[in-house]
Length: 474
Image 1 (cartoon, rainbow, N blue to C red):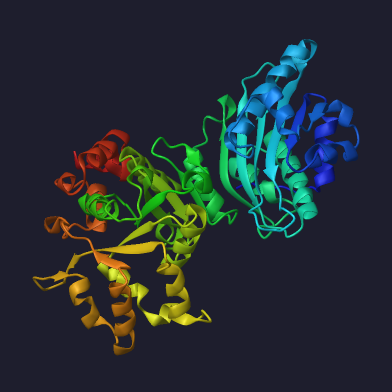
Image 2 (image 1 turned 90 degrees about the vertical axis):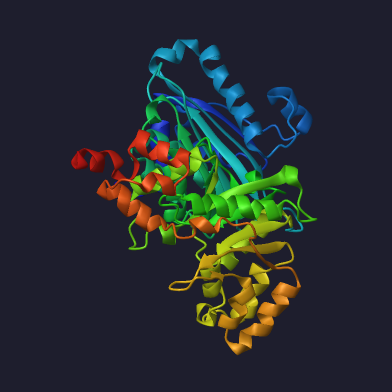
């Protein structure tokens, strides 16, 4: 990532104002005119601002941008950008040949008087990097954590300037992203969705940018769908019954697929699960992406390609502990039933008390989150090493220290843990690391350990060095 000197908000706004080729409109709804105000205060704003607007009344907003079910959502933002950007070349035809037009928009919900809501907003920029050039689009979703609405408005003003400056004055995509928080901190603003696309940004894979949001600490979790499009987690998972599988998926094998499908058979029969609202999610943690502290971006994209080919929604998170993931999902699904799939050996680690040594309430505090009222764990069996028997919840209790047996029994009695019955035990010998080693060495026979779609993706796209090793083998 390139280094650059961090400018103040005023310095950034002034640089934009002094660049006579940059000209556009501001439409801000829900907090005020904080972004446009920074350009006015910097001086020379007449060289940058064609128009500013705040359509606070719903009737006025609908009259300008069309009706919308919700006013703080990506759809509303898109309509705002459509409307404002189209007016620029239409009304300023004499400037088309020499101007890089932009339309900036945001729709925001700040903290209410009772402080009972989650302040958040959608912010977007539609822009050209050269006169008469193609149109690019930059969209983010922010959560605001300041306890004072005025401070939230101030932070929005900063992030808007950072966004415009980044697109016009920076070149490295990751720097454009990270610079959003210049003059701010993650304690004040969280960015959990980032999308930058258009003819000038064809080289950007926004799935990789989702990973970089988490890697750079701008958020704890980011998400993309089977089509590779990034998603805003709170919106995508809102009031959904989420069934989540954590894994390395390097590559996904028959075991991973069976864990999802077999667990879903149980999950959909839960009395408090709406089958029409079930969403399967494959989760990758930073820990599984960077065991040595370094993230191989190509390796991540290989896994992303394969999971997308399997039709999976992918969550990238920095929630190493399962109970933190459970807390996060419970908050955004608004109390809907959540299923978490894990192998029996992963459950063993969950019951290790040393994991919770630095938590004030120890294992009990963390289990309160992990086994909350809306969460159930589905435990996939394993074959014991050097033994011809399955390791399941039926014999798990025998492995526990005496002081944890009653806790385990309580969870079982209250339907918080369930064996995944009907698992394909014939595949339990498959280990992803061994399959990966076979692919990288160019060995034959790895195909039988993975689903056909995974095999196709690896061969067609040369994932995990497949083409290289194949050529060397020949």
